[in-house]
Image 1 (cartoon, rainbow, N blue to C red):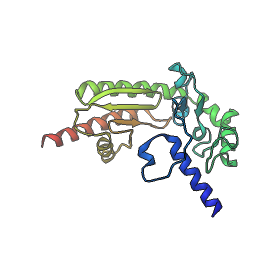
Image 2 (cartoon, helix red, strand yellow):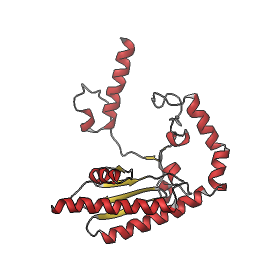
Image 3 (spheres, rainbow, N blue to C red):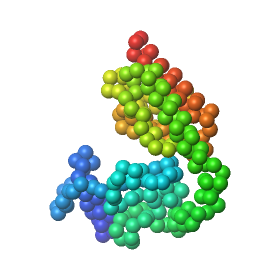
Length: 223
């Protein structure tokens, strides 16, 4: 019982630390003694791999961070813990598999060298430019639908306008029916995270599918 209570108490403390009432609802009483300050951590879990460029994204923006999260990217999806023991609780953090994967990445393993030698980095930059160009053209074609295309490398976001009449989730569903897997990031942003080896043909097809999917949703509004 003591172990169960300790784990539950830690959960309550974590809920309090978030400072977000929407996550605290239904739990309590919450512990006292928390002071909330502006956070200064940056999430590079996806960006660390998807940009593959220097400087890092936060460095391009001129941001000096206290904590840079990169554990899942370094561990190839198996989260490893880059903080010192005891400073952060993580169910699977720091396990031997994750640490071995991170060491292989950081020690310039054959897989990492292949990113340079086999042209993966060059492909990331080329396909990124191709996708951004195609999405900007789609933005002009579908006037009033796309508010902004943003991102670096192969981590891109397509923000829909408030008046377009459909959500990112609806566009995601339409694109999936047409053969393209994407994911919404909030109500109005569609996230595109293709693999690093995506081809030029696949990038063009992706933009074409998004175009067709938007057309379907717009046609449905007129019916």
